[in-house]
Amino acid sequence: MTTKRIQAIGICARMTEVGDRAFRFARDLARRYAVPLDIFVFPTSPCEEHERRGRRGENVDLSEQDQVNIERETRFYYDELLEDEDLDVGFRLCLGDEAPELRSCLFDRQFDILVLAYEKRLCPFGEQSIEEFARSMACPVVLVGPGQREEIHLNSPATLWIEGLGLADGAWKPIEDAAAVAAGIVPRMVSRLREERILDLAPEELTDLLESSVVLSENDTRMCGPIRILDLDRTIAVQEQAREGRILLRGMPAVEEARRFVDERLEAYQRLWDGSGCKIDYDL
Image (tube, rainbow, N blue to C red):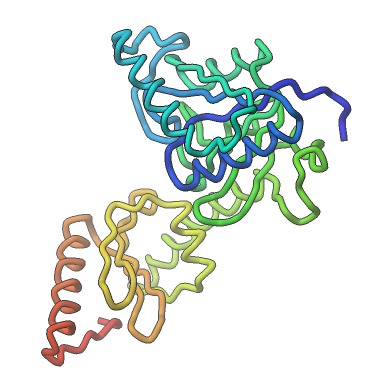
């Protein structure tokens, strides 16, 4: 492990379940080194698509009161997660684009290790994917996730800090592995759907697919889990679970047809709930 002295831990605010896990990791790391925890707040989450703000936020139209409100809301949210009055926590509202803002903060030594919530593979982070951004940073970057997985992904500089990050052998993966999975699962499924209209998926394939595609809608069937409409890089599919436990992925010609299919399926489940004796053929 390198002997560079850690002076601060940074994290981008993300008020989600995955964001909370990332925050706890960063909080515990700041405690470990007895250093400040700096929370960087953007007008919109870096993980959500948005218009370019400019390097210094010149394209952002926020009044001073709006800025105060954003910072206050963020402070209130994280107060409940801190659980430590002695931890030195700072908040910075970043109005510019993610990459230049965070590189400027790194240059100013506002953090030495950056922790990010990893909502899903290939999710946007400013003008890049989150994996591309992490790989481009010269400092250690820790991605907590993806999604509900209890996983940690590290960029190359972070792999020199395994002991200092408190990670055991096998408790982390290189970011390159996550990017490779994301780059492979969607094209593979699209290719299979060209040959077969309905695919049977293994549970791990579903997990990878959900973390690498766009979920356009999700409805609870109340009997067989959720039924989802997915965008697989402009190929539309419906994912559902049959009553016998099969995980199915069904190709659709367009979003409108997918929505009609989902509506009809939900109506069928409602008839089952009502005891009408309706039977669903999942292979049709």
